[in-house]
Image 1 (cartoon, rainbow, N blue to C red):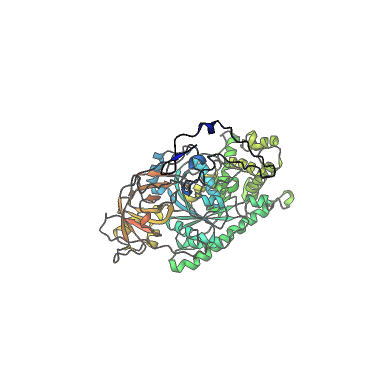
Image 2 (image 1 turned 45 degrees about the vertical axis):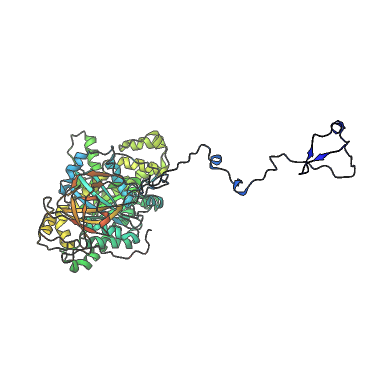
Length: 606
């Protein structure tokens, strides 16, 4: 058959029908050859470009349900971060929500006391490391707030910073303002400053002393007066602050050293005598330089300027407050018909070489004689009426079963619940002893400070003459020395405290004259300011005024002379210390003397 093809070689016409009818050739079997190769499907043989390859899973596969938000340019403010932090970092626990609802006073009562400078005491707590200053503040806070902290742990209310709570160590001074009554029910405002005891943080105590009128030296009853205690005493005399003493950790003499009551008494006497010797030494060293009048002040329990305490177990007492236990018991047993006992006179007879004669019912300066002229029981009155009852309470709490202990404590007016009676020895001791001293601990401290620490009005002239660098007869100095609330403003800033989020500072200072008000325009005078060179002066507006209570603060509209307050809005203009004034007087303003530290710190907190 002839076939015809076109010019491109394609066959013209259809294929032969005979060829279509031919059967396909049979398959050729090759027994010795390789097996036919298996072929993949068409999808597996496709070529994938490099840019189309998928090396990692998509975000939708890893985070199902997540949404992608695309913002336009400049749609978000610059102050707002692109990725907000999950939670704000809290640096301390200081807030401005005001006092807790459990306090025994209202805001109006607090404001009334703040306007009475004679009812204000500015006191700082000084002492060596771990002598119990912060725990002593806890005892006062419990009374002021009307609460009882968990006896199984230490609250350390004045340690407001997180690192202080973690290290169980005070690093910065903590202002704590409390409203507490004395033994007669008269209320005072105590502007306390809990200062660190570590030697490298002694600058905090220097700042607190500049604003304080009194210094309470806290001493460990076992360790006694140490080097840091001596420096605190000398620094308090340098700043013309009245000194009171608290012999803390008396429980260590009973529980740890297990001293007999008489030996414990001599240990306490030695501690007080050692403190008096250091005061006399520091007073004599500074007498000519500071032009001090009179002799060195002397501490004596009979005077009321020495307190005995165990802050860990929640008790503080003076001789007068402990004598009031016997006076109340006599009145209660007699049903009010017997004549009352003067607790102050009785307390004066509970120290020193005083002995009680049971036959005559009088105190004598020599041990009473027994029958036949033989020497009697030569036990001093402090041992017989204070230490021995205290030892008995400790012995019963640590040695009696709960049922027997309940009956014994009920005889001295202490009531504990069934759960409290089953506590471990340490919290059980705290529960029993703070109930015994419940209404006497804080009033004993207030009595001591009210009588032996001067009020801001009484001590303002000495503070101004010692630290104010302006003219002594100027209008501003005269108003500050007289604590004149109507005079020109004069505030001494002694410390900057950080806010809870550590983003700003609030100024802590003492008002000497005038009234610092919210919204007032003030001049912040730095340490380099002088009338001849007024460059270190910055105008600021007071953004807030508050009274600090430790872990919270009470905002106020204004504060008058004698008060230690927190001031907002001026912290950025203060380097270390500063003086706030206004333009209410033509007298050129001056600054307070910059702080003088007694040593140089070798450790600093970053």
